[in-house]
Every structure is written in C-alpha cells, then in structure tokens.
Image 1 (cartoon, rainbow, N blue to C red):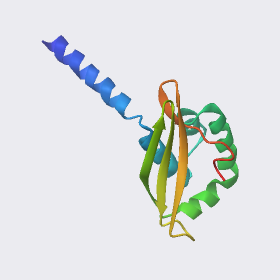
Image 2 (tube, rainbow, N blue to C red):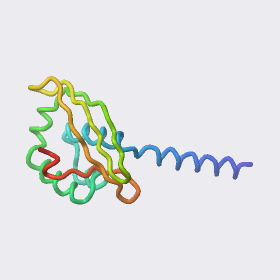
Image 3 (cartoon, rainbow, N blue to C red):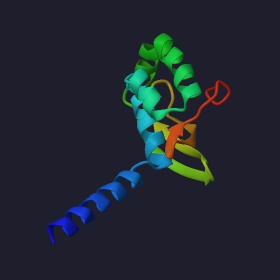
Length: 126
C-alpha cells in the first residue's frame, strides 16, 4: 500500500511539474523578471532559447537599470495566448508603466527540449 501511495504521489508531482510550463506562465514570469532587472545569465539560459538568451544578455548588460526605472510600479497580465504546434505568442498587458498608461507586449515562445522558452529576435523587441 505504501508503494502504491508513493507511486501515485510521484505521478502527481510529475503531472503538476509538467503543467507548470505553460506559455502564458513562462511569458508572464519573463516580463516580471525582465522588468525587475533580475534576468541574469542563469535565468536567461534556463527560460530562453539559446539565441534569445545571448541577445537579451547583451540588452540587460546595457539597459538593465533604465528598464527597471521605466517599469517601476507596472503590473502585468496575460490577455491572449495563441499556440501553434511548438510555437506560441502570448500578449501581455502592461499597466502603470512610467510615462505611459497602458502598453502591451507580444512574447514569442518556442518548445525547446519539451519546455516552453522565450524566443524573441531583434525585430520582435522593437
């Protein structure tokens, strides 16, 4: 009986862990982490595709403090999620951003190793 309960607990834990990697949750966490200026190299490597991690690593090195100031007090919410196979686009509403009332960001994601990861290009970030 103990083995059965242990097996069921492990199965539930794996199911919950797998459900935690949804495009909208990944994109929302990404926006909050970037806005707080906390997207260090380890975070980017774990949550972005390789090319995106390199690109954003350079951006964060140059503009981390500016981004943090501009996003201070902002709140984020997912307004739309579109999934097409191994690609997804999540639209996030940004409110309370300094100098602007409301704004939105479209975060592109791609399945990489079975996990959703942010996949942005220079063009996507403009």
